Amino acid sequence: MQVSQAHLSGVMLVEPSRIDDERGFFSEIYRSSVLNVGVAWVQENQSRSTHAGTLRGLHLQFGNYAQAKLIRVTRGRIFDVVVDLRRGSSTFGQHETFTFTEDDLRQLFVPEGFAHGFCTLEPATDVVYKVSQPYSAAHEGGVIWNDATLGIAWPFPEASLVISARDRALPLLRDAHF
Image (cartoon, rainbow, N blue to C red; front, side, top):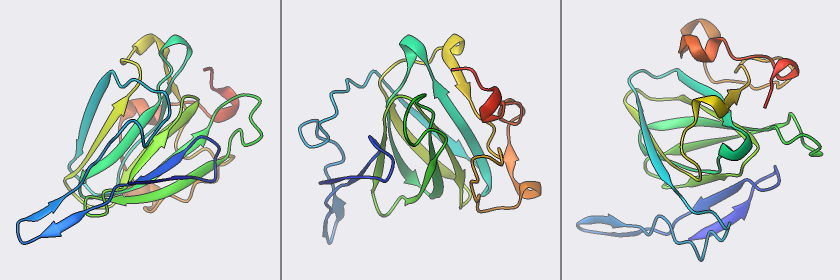
């Protein structure tokens, strides 16, 4: 398993090794001593998106319920985005993008203070992620996916995206409270 630092400080790309044989493959997906980030995972979530072009995000939790996340795709393919929302960070408001597939087994560690979102590139895509704090509706926040100040180049035109009403109502970065 290889762990490398992404461009944004604290975000890490995890690339598990894979052993293939006539039965299929085996891969060690997680080992705390290799991804040594001092996080105790307390919950694991899974989402299934029926349609390609489903956009989820950009979400975060704040305060005592701020979450670190470890994200991976178990079916399909996604365009993944993290946005630094750590006030005082030299990269505040900057984003980084990744593409993950069920076959590459790669994962993304997202520390507290980052918004996260993704857009499915294939139908019937499953995303599984561990989190360091349980969900708290009172501590959830986010930034609208198409905020021009973020400059994210999403892979589908807006008219073809499938987005929840909740995500369409997220604030611009300048108006967000977290």
